[in-house]
Picture 1 (cartoon, rainbow, N blue to C red):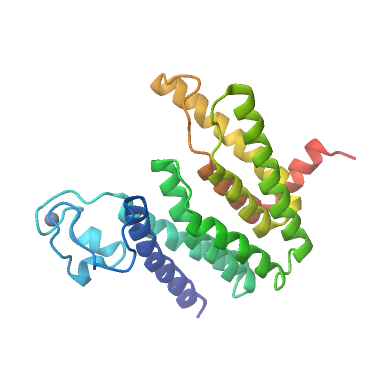
Picture 2 (cartoon, protein in one colour; picture 1 turned 45 degrees about the horizontal axis):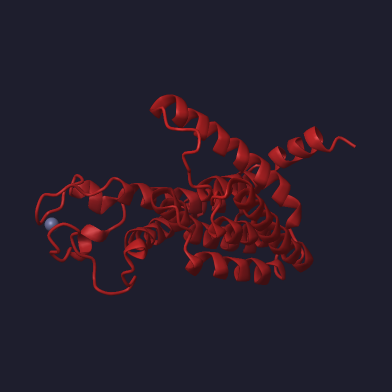
Length: 257
Ligand SMILES: [Zn+2]
C-alpha cells in the first residue's frame, strides 16, 4: 500500500511539474496559463495530448518535436521529475499530514519561482503574495509554528531584507537586491516562522557566495555580476525544513549559550 501511495505522490508531483513548465515558459512572456492549448514553441503546431504526459512524453519523442523536429528543452522532463521527487520525498518524510500538504503546495509555487528567477531575475508576485497568505493561514493548523511565529516571520523577513536592499542602494547608488527577494523572504518567514530566518539568511548567503566565487573562477565573470538570490533562499528554506539537524548545529555554532 505504501508503495502505491509513494507512486501516487510522485505522479501527482510530475503532473504539477508539467503545469510549472507552462508557468515558467508563459509567465515571462505575459501569456495566459490556461489558454491556448499547448503548442510547439517553434512552428506553433498543436501538441497531441499524449505527448504532454509528464517525463514520458519527452522520452518517447527523444527530446525532439514531432511536428518540426526542433529540440525540446531538457528543462521540461527535468522540472517534471524534480517536482515528482520533491512530492515523493515530502511524503516519505512527513507522511499523510498537514505538513506534507503545506510543503507540496510550497514546492508547486517555489519551483516556478526558482526557474523564472534563475533565467529572468524576477520573482512573480502571483506566487509571493499568495505564499505569504498561505503561510499565515497554515500556521493556524500547523504543529510546528504558531500564528505569532508566522506573522513575526513575515515582518522580520520582509523588513530585514528591505532594509538591507535600501542600505545597499544608498551606499552603492545601485540596486543590488530586488524587492522580489524581500517578498520571498517574507513568504519563507510565514512558512517556517521567525526562528528559522537567521538560518535561512546565513545558509543562502553562504551558498550564494560559493556559487558566485565559482562563477568568477570558471567563467572569469566580474566581481559585481548579479546572480539571482531567490534560488538560494528557496534552497536554504528546504535545508531548514528537511534537515532540522542543520539548524541545531547552526544554533550551537553561533549561539553557544
Ligand atoms: Zn514544431
